Amino acid sequence: MSDKELLEKLKNIVTPYVQDKEGLENFDENTDFLNDLKINSANLVDVVLDVEDEFNIEIDNDSMNDMLSVLDAKKIIQLKLAGK
Amino acid sequence: MNFNSIISQLPYSQPFLFVDEILQIDENGATGTYRFPKDSFFYKGHFKDYPVTPGVILTECMAQIGLVCLGIFLISAEENKKMKIGLSSTEVDFYKPVFPGETVKVLSTKIYFRFNKLKCKVEMFDAEENLICRGIIAGMLKTEL
Image (cartoon, rainbow over all chains, first blue to last red; front, side, top):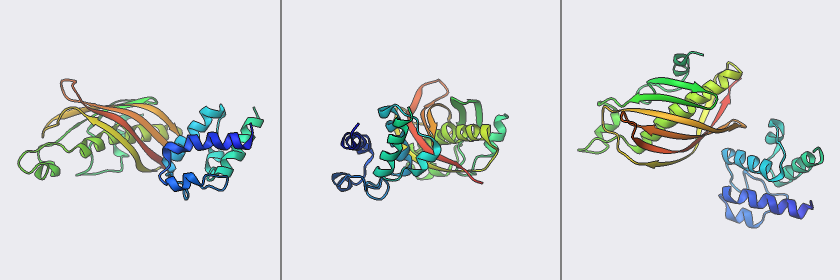
């Protein structure tokens, strides 16, 4: 899967939880889930559960704690996909 | 585990404790009851001449029995620690009013408990098993070291 495809999938997953639509327009690797998109920590859990379903991977507690930006999420997803 | 010990671990007291009894609890959900005393503080103002239990209080009762009691059970099953809690979302539909003195029964079914977030489907019934309200409630539960 290309980076572009992965980012597109991630953007679709986070969209329902985003409180700051402007942040969504500028969605890229540097986007921070909490600060740029104003997703609260409870909805970040839903994002991670949707990521698990979409990519058919399992995210552990440590990975969850590290998942603060789109780049973090991309790295973790690629790592888990490579390990399958 | 003793159900009474769960109630004693609840972080609420009068006038904001809305749990009388836990009837059943396991890893998939909780069932409990509460009787709304006629002299509860909110009846004085809701409404001025017509006391009805406010929807926010019914929601709180559902959250205390359905989520917090269940959360204490789930966490205590793992480790015996104190917890910090916060409500994160509610989506509730109401079907029937609850008048002063009524007893309600709350049933919750766990949707998931992951990464400290507990999300449940919760329903409330009156003494004749009529549906009062139901919805989806979620909260964050963290154990303190």
